[in-house]
Length: 164
Figure 1: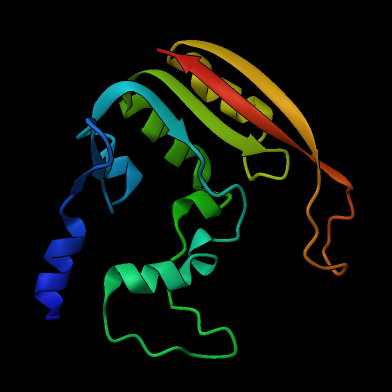
Figure 2: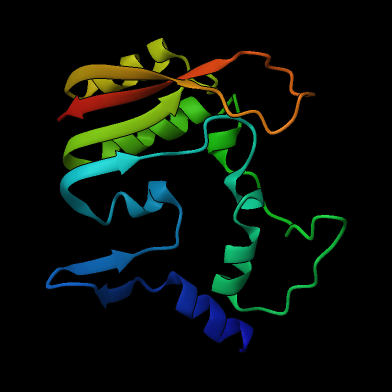
């Protein structure tokens, strides 16, 4: 596939039908996309920390991009630019811009206690734009290895709720 055709294909929303409902899929920066879409409910589940999701989904990204990718290193990960959601000094502004520009009545944000943003920071942003509520649930923490910095046995998942 030619590069120009590939880029055009990626930026177009995909449409498909599973049932009688129409579904759109987008592949673009959320803070740009949010200005083009609207709806009743917006569910957000961004990266919580400095680990970019791209590393976890590199095989799916390779399939979606359909390019001539050559794996590198032990893991075969793609090179990718770290998003502002994974940068401590930029994530607050990223979330605030998204919430400010979201034309949705109900906004839900899933975020845990190991995130770059604190509970108070998220609350501060959400309260600027409507009625805020918070729910939480504690889970047994998944540990991929014993060398992790965090030795906690559990983690708390928060569901931040905004009614605009």
